[in-house]
Amino acid sequence: MKVICVGDSITRGQVSGNYVKLLESRLPDSTMINAGVNYDVSAHVLDRLSEVIDQDPDVITVLIGTNDATATLGEQTAQKLRDRWKLAEDPNSDRYAANLAAITTRLKDETRARIALLSPPVLGEDLDSVALRRTSEFGEIVRKVAAEQFVTYLPLNEQMVAYLEKADHTPRVHYRADSLLAPTAAMQHFFLGRRFDAISKSRGLLLTTDTVHLNSRGAGMIADLIEGFVRST
Image (tube, rainbow, N blue to C red; front, top):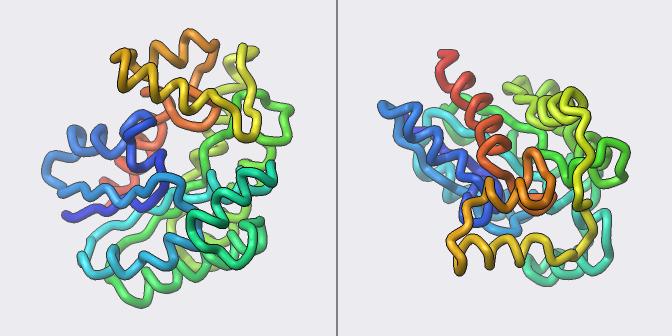
């Protein structure tokens, strides 16, 4: 069975816990293909979809929306994404919904694959923050698109929020647009050899390393959802 995981840096797994590698170990009879692109947004996924379709997969999972959401939280972030992907307009919730629907339609029409859409992971771990609530709003968009397109919906955001609610934990660092948390985490990992979980723990975080990318617990939640979907044939 050929499984393609489409997404951004959280799927790519270079600066985040790598859920695709977890799936490789859990699903040894499947061929796992990582189609994650750093900084990706839904509009660019739609542009590069032929690369996925041409591989004739049996299963496709789509986890996109983190960067679309961050673009709505800071003009500087929106400008960077607009310049990087040569976007005519800033990402927003309406364009995200339209792009995700178009992505799903193409995958349904041009492949024979079983398709699952995942709601985006949390931004930050402050339950009452604008950033975390924004990811839940984008998750609701994913849920609606999945229902309208009759594909499987995997509730990652909801599971993460439930975990944080149960933990009743106050993080020591908080999501801020264009903060240095992500680059300093990457530097610690690549130059000092620190594990993502150690970086996460030092910052008082439970699921993320830098309020965006994931530690092993966060990546494991994605792997759990996708493994369950792949096995449900």
